[in-house]
Image (cartoon, rainbow, N blue to C red; front, side):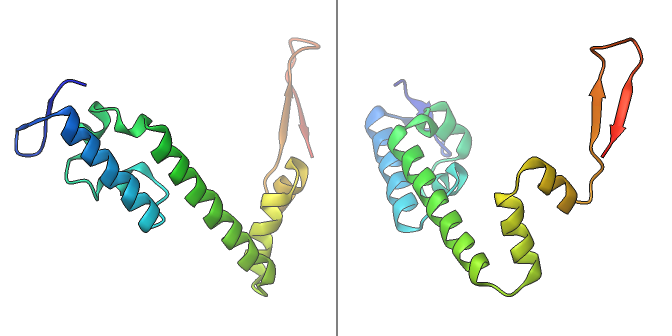
Length: 126
């Protein structure tokens, strides 16, 4: 991994890049982070350098962030299930609904475009 300049203009050695990655991984674990950008904030380098070093491609970091995201989604759905708030109940239902149910709940008109049978455009409102 070639050296890249950091905020101060100094080159980042492969050893320094490894330390930066370790900081990002530790921060993701300790603070239950869910986005790469959040991890970068704990590293001491700017986001452009983080990406140039391809640290965002690290499988361990991506797995931790994904696990944190999934864990948070499960917790939220559990809270929504127990909630008496209609908005949360509707949000949970939308997550579980099929396309037709979700469209009806969203109060959207579904337009089916079928051009395969003729040159005329057929629009079906459901």
